[in-house]
Length: 354
Image 1 (cartoon, rainbow, N blue to C red):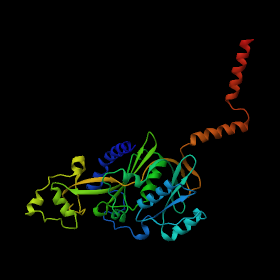
Image 2: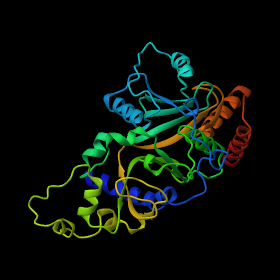
Image 3: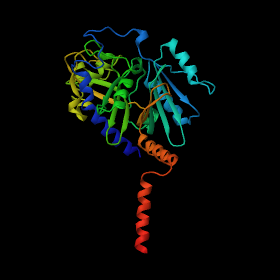
Image 4: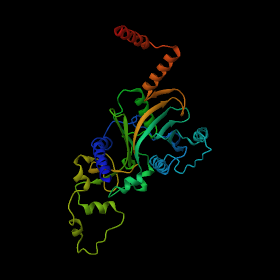
């Protein structure tokens, strides 16, 4: 089972890295448009903030998933939010307003499947996703030989990369706006690359109508230098040279190249700015993604106009509901239009028998 997980992780990883990171680490016009070419950073009261909640009785795996989502939304979320069964959504809305909280992520569990609702506070709209499958961050870490998730990557919010959502459907347009507004907008002309430590990737499959939800940390290594020199630049402590007779032995001890270069030549990019740890501007570096988790497969099943209520703007099963409503209306009206035809056919068969 672990081998299947690694195979699926590898295929998804290389599909995303081939386009997503060249998008952010090469010069580009703009992502979330701030309205100005050199717009200043958002003030604190304009930065999107979130509450990650659990409604109803959640089993331990879903409680861990709630914790992982809170960690993903760091630093602009309430990591240690206390909840009680007596709390209602109105209580959280009243608390959210003075704290500047703009979005709710609500996990609930039913007999059919767990659900994730993303709502805009205080007046909506609300997106309801059915969670088809999920993998916790701890399980992803245990399955990796060299996981990378230092605490420092959670000091800045993740970048958001979406793929396959430009289908022209109205409910997906709303989903794009909702998801973009959950994270601070960036201007690629002014953003510091050193703050880009994580990325949240959302891939939409039009055929299956499923979202692939992935969370990665970002690492970059300078290329064209020996491994020992690279480690010397990246480490804060000096290496032990007591067993060497000359410094040149340390420089020439190991070969050139890095694991990232060997795995994917397309990951080599020329950075437009400083990224730290020997990654300087206008020099080539090998960019690599390390999955952090959580991982989810989601399906958008409903869009409501209000905060977890109001008019239903989209429903995945609206065709079935419409058929049921039409049948109910036919029952109330008496005999449907198809029934006389069936009676005529029955009469014709009766005459043939006679």
